[in-house]
Length: 150
Image 1 (cartoon, rainbow, N blue to C red):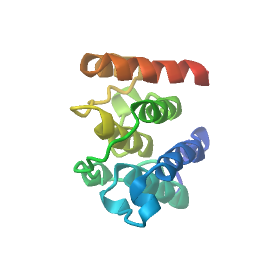
Image 2 (image 1 turned 180 degrees about the vertical axis):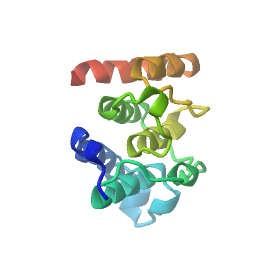
Image 3 (image 1 turned 135 degrees about the horizontal axis):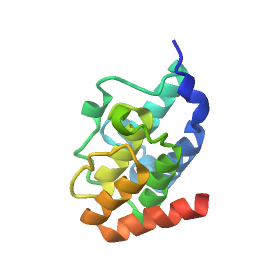
Image 4 (image 1 turned 45 degrees about the horizontal axis):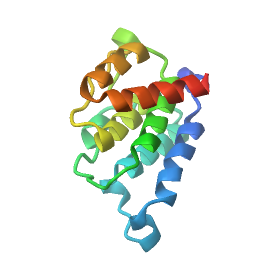
C-alpha cells in the first residue's frame, strides 16, 4: 500500500546530500563503514526503504536511530541537509509523526550537531526557533540554506 504523500516529496534530493557525506568519510574510504551504527547510513537506509515500499512513515524506526555515532561531521554540511529535510517537510503540525522518513533523516542529522534532540513542532519556523535555543549558529546556517533553496 503506497502513501499518496510520496509524490509531494523528493527523497532523492535528500539521498544525494547524504551520499555526499559518505564521500568525505574516512571509514567509507577504508572499507570500515558500518551503516547500522552510522547516523548517515541510517538516514540513507530509511530513505531507500521508503522509496522501495512507497511509504513515508516507518513505525518504530525512530527508536533505531544510532545515537552512539560520535564521528565528526561538518556542521555546515549537516545544516544544509537539515534544511533540505525542512524543505521536504509538509508541516503536518498536530499530525506530525517522529517515524516519518523526513523526520527520521532530520533527527539523525540533529544527533550529529546538537546536544539534545529537538521535539519537532510540525512547523519549520517553530523548529528553527527551537534549534536557535540550543545553537544559534546552526539555526542560522539552516535558515541560510533554506533561503538559498527557495
